[in-house]
Image (cartoon, rainbow over all chains, first blue to last red; front, side, top):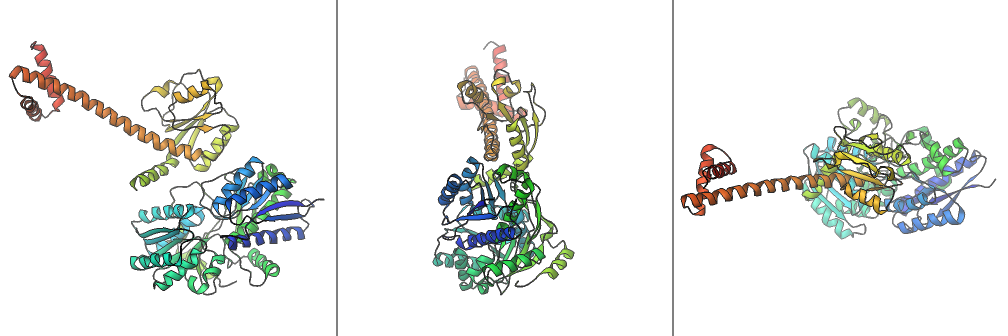
Amino acid sequence: MAPIEIGILYSSTGVTATVEETQRRAVLLAMEEINDVGGVLGREITPVCVDPNSNPRLYGQLSEQLIIERGIRLFLGCYMSSSRKAVIPMVERHDALLFYGTAYEGFEFSRNVFYGGAVPNQNILPLAGYMLERHGSRVAMIGSDYVCPYEANRVMSDLIYERGGSKALETYLPLNASAHDYEAVAQSIQRSGADFIYSTVVGEGMARLHQALERAGVDRQKMPIASHMSCEADIETIGAELAEGLITCATYFESVDTEANRKAIHRYRQRFGADARTNACWEAAYVQTHLLAQAMSACGSTEPVHISRAMTGLGMDAPQGRICVDGSNHHTHLNPRIGRCNANGSFDILAEAPEPVIADPYVMSHVPSTWTGQSHPKRQSATVQLAVGAA
Amino acid sequence: MTRVNDSQTILKDIRLLRLLVVHPDDRDREELAAQLSRIGCSFTCTWPLLDALPQGADMVLMAVHPDTLSQPCPWLERPNAPPVIPIVAFENPITLAAVLHLNAFTTIASPVRPAGVLTALALTLHQSKQRRSREHYIQRMEQKSAHQQVINKATRALMDARRLKEDEAYEVLRERAMLQRQPIENVARQVLKATEALGM
């Protein structure tokens, strides 16, 4: 029987290639795992990879090309929201499905998309709650100048004001800002007397920010950096010595202590090298590939409309723990945890949600989750024991 | 900056909205109801059109349906009627006229897609609040100008009767209003009544 072709829309080139490359590899790994145990419906699944060069227009063009020229109607991919927004009209027009395995800013639903990454109530909210509770409520905000940082800072600002805190500073720099621009901001941050820094800087800017803060003499013990947009792949580019102490919230860390994670990492390193690192986007892409295969097996079809129905309520023991697909909003119930970057560039887990958190992509007023607060000392001591070092 | 904050406060009210969906039970209504649930609004669905609006509906999402174009909606004409978002399947002049009649700020196109519903709610909530405050302002201004007319007339009557200058006549009215602890327009009205009664 002919293999089932699946379109893979991750960039190997361009500004967001670093993380997207880990997502592409996660998909390849999952597909090999699936094929090793007989494929889906007695057929092999094969990836058809394209390189959209981190360019939203190319995501749109290439996805439509795969649909029209190769009849592909199942896709895994996209990283930036702009690329997802470019692919959605194509999958809607041709009744195809996109599996989007990246955290994003929420406020979206398409019947042709399944969202595997966190939305703000699963990452920004817990991070804000944790930081404001432990480190104080005078906050310096620095972000890249595009949609996600503004939305993240809106959520953070609300929570700051609710507890009578204040913003020491709020600045946005262009995606291509120079080291010099970051130096200037870092000096203002150093003078601002903030309790912590909330960074929504992405891409190459992250390393520049961390370097600039170090040079400005910011004491990371006294004024830690919190960023829900930094993962293990970013730490590699920043360098662990500069990122140590960074606090983030993600639904997966390489250091998560589950059997599924240990096995997946083991196979991943066998396949892609002993130094290959994983991250939350990697995990979401890996999990969504398995969910897609599960859905096809469950409905006995490769038709998007049947797969879509079969996705509802589907769950699995993912590397991050138990997850479940919400049929009403196509998002995923995930397991947020707070992690602090250690000297090895891995994250020590400081706290974690006691059970999967429902995705609420349309919430505007957030109520802090209790597990991030100090009101649960029991939970806290339990999670300290769960903390593990470099995997 | 305050404008942005005001708008953001309004957005937080969206989950508190009580919506009424007046729509036949079909695929569009299903799609709309599912998206309203995702957004997190509370809503009730009803069809056919109602003669009276149920209590406590903050906003109405209503099918503009070829079958019901001729049916009147008396509740729409009442002051303080909730804003309406028409759900529109046809773009012919008759349907358009019906849509215009609803005084809507925006529409939702049929077939209903999830994207755009939240924007329609936000826009309508924001604009209807602004419209309401504009209407209040106009009402106040109309009242004020009606009062001003009465005061002007009374001032003129006093000027004629007592051979006063305009500011002196006005001062008489003002003093009397202070003494009686009454709005000046009431005193003006009394003066006008008295002068009419005396045939002056």
